[in-house]
Image 1: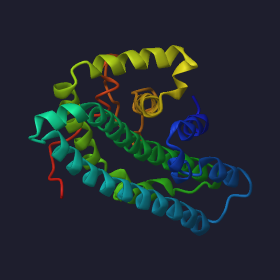
Image 2: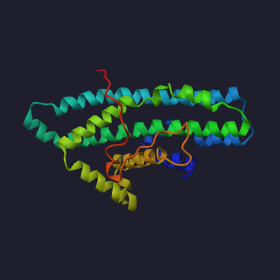
Image 3: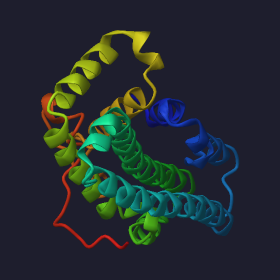
Image 4: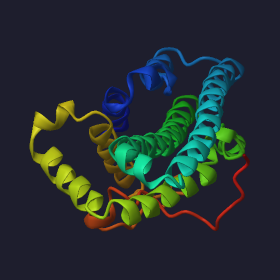
Length: 240
């Protein structure tokens, strides 16, 4: 699938309030196809996109840290009667929280990949060599650094496995039905999360076109796809 179609589909599959936060890939591509702008102008456009990514990513990350703390407190509530009464809402909250974090990791992946591809098109059109130095700058940006969010994803996968042992089977069953039926369109965060994970796997799949600017392959089996989206490095402290 061409990247332009992939990012369009991913934007449509994302949460409505996220849709204007993605790379304006089509607009930038059309701009390059017409008389390509001077490098200084093009860099300015890309910098504006990066500022947008960073502001959104950091805001979401901060919200996730707060939400994480609240959920930990709920799950550790010593009032067993109250916990049992609220277990359905807690379960739903954990699933939605996990799904939104997966979507944010995918947001980082797809915007990074879009930048590398649009820079390649610009260099090809102008004969320049902008991509390499610009990507080195991108690698230092907050939106690219997903270690903390990825760690939280893993932690809540472990919690879901422990608290709701049937959840993994349920989500995997949902993935299979989503792949063959449009009836899943009303399933909200589940559908969005599955679409994001499919996109991450596709973008990270090893191929003959794999290069220095590609994200590493996921190397996941289908049974691991839904609840284990990507390798996460060693644990890092989470500020409270």
